[in-house]
Length: 181
Image (cartoon, rainbow, N blue to C red; front, side):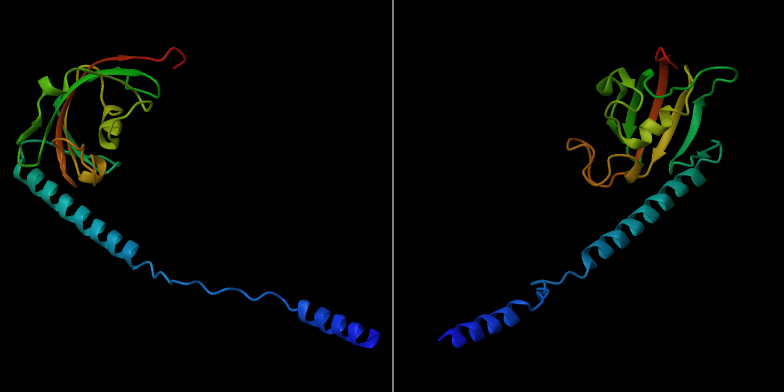
C-alpha cells in the first residue's frame, strides 16, 4: 500500500510539472476596419484640399497664404509693424462668422457674438486656435479650414454637419496678455 501511495505521488508530481500551454484567442481581428477608415479619410482630405484649391484658383485677386498647420487664409485687413500675437493663457477677444465652401452662412457674427478665448485653455476647434495665434490686434483674416481642422466627423451637433470644410472670417478686437508672458 505504501508502495502504491509513493508511486501515485510520483506520477502526480510528474504530471503537475508540465508547463502551462498558451490559450488561443477565440476571434482573430485583421485590422481591416482601421485600414479602410484611414484610406477613406485620406481620400476625403484630398478631395477637400482639391475643392479649397479650386476656390483659391478662382480668386486670383486675393493672395492666399498656406499655413503649415493645414489650412489656408488671406488678410482682409493686415496690420504692419510691431504688435503682439496671442500666446498661451492670453485672453483673445474676437468676432467671427462661419460659412460653408459655397459661401452660405452657417453662423453669422451676430449668432457667434463676441468671444473671449483663453488661448489654448478653452474649447475651440483646432484650426481656429492655430489661426488666432497668427493674428495681430485689429486684423481681419479669412480662413479656409478642411474638415479635420474644423469640426471633423461629428460636426458641432447643431448646424455644422459631418466632415464639412469651413470658411471663417475672424477679427481680433484685443489681446490681453497673461501677467507672466
